[in-house]
Image (cartoon, rainbow, N blue to C red; front, side, top):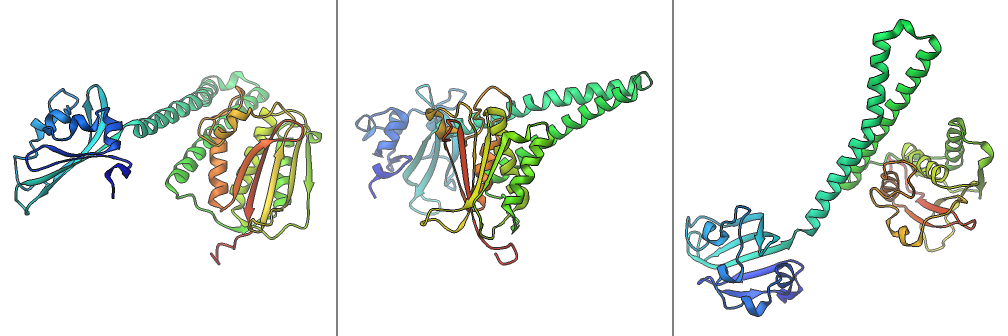
Length: 346
């Protein structure tokens, strides 16, 4: 294999410590041209330092020191002001023989930095979203405990209803975090049961109207007969609830829900659901980011985690979800779930 075909940086030094291999990825990561490294002593060709400014090769002394060493684990080092992830393996002539080759792997820190930034953003979002309801819960409960006799029954009920709503908000956020953890680790469980998609859609529309939305804002279209569908009913409700809430919160006009069999002849048999609104829609340049973490279509609240979870749930079922522009100009989400098999046959 050509070392230049490797995605990670590769540097190899011979038994004298001179560089005999410096691939293209190493040049990209370090900013050092191969001709400036090949044939030169490793300490000069790759002048790494630890975070305290100590010269790394003098500190680790790969060609000296205990002969039982096999290498160095990956760590973050500095090279000319830039951070580089470095690991090394010592190739010896025998179990305790002298080092014949020093093989060094280099990786950039961009991917790790993006992961750390994502985690930091998640923590910041969670802290922000938890602060408001917990402050409310603490305030109302403390007030009721201290001044219970001063309030009328209606006032007590109002405060307790507010506490209950905020507690539900916290519970939902924690459930979202657990879902994200399971999706990221590939451990999202799907407990398949017979699902009546028509009934599920009507149930979720009813939940929206019970929460205060006008019944005439929703239009349901059923293209029957629908094939038998085996899916996780709770997670199907989670997907439908999220898409309807997004359409109501960020869209305008009538929210249309179309349910029918998968019409694409090349696709696996299944059921598709399309949720459309008549709002401003999603800008073309944002459509590729809709299902990523923290994407928000407007400043009307939300954690920006819902659609990421929706995509994870749909894909855990073996289905697909897409976003586009509705005929009336608003946003249009369409997801399809395969017929699949019940859990006891899977």
